[in-house]
Image (cartoon, rainbow, N blue to C red; front, side):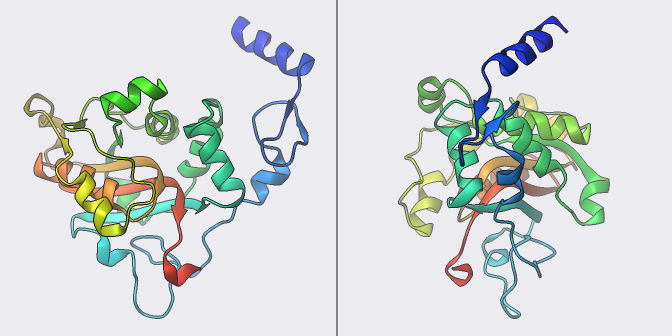
Length: 241
């Protein structure tokens, strides 16, 4: 209670400016106007992967393994408000914005079976080098708030990176897949809760799906029955531009 009171007094004494438009905000990091301008994924969307549909072919579903039930994202990135929020969380150490981002992630619409079956939330893990450099895992911050809102367990030590990988920025789709192939594993001692489970994997952005698929493969190999993906941002495919 004391911490909350002190934080509130600090916000009144030193009001923040919105990260995007510089409007004054009493609390938080983006103003209400900018949050309303999130570039939402347009409808109609694929019921499985949540990607906007262009005709009968879904370009994202074809990249997902058969054990991936569904994928959902809040908005397009990297442009606009969504990109600014991801950048602030991932690179500018604005940890507090994760709660507002996760709040929007937690309100995404899912197929009824996903809502009924989801067992736990698992963040995409960072490698040791990157975690040491950054000091925190942005996917874990998001996953923690999402799990709290869904009232599900958060399994932060379930999946581990077994090797360091290059940054995925500027890599092609095939290069991304090769970069993270077999980069994740689930220790034998942690596999029991996974048997038959429907796990929701959380990350900040879905670009080609390579990283999420690599984590999903490790979970499936360790006993998970089915996996779904939840991210704040999603990169457009060529059909969406």
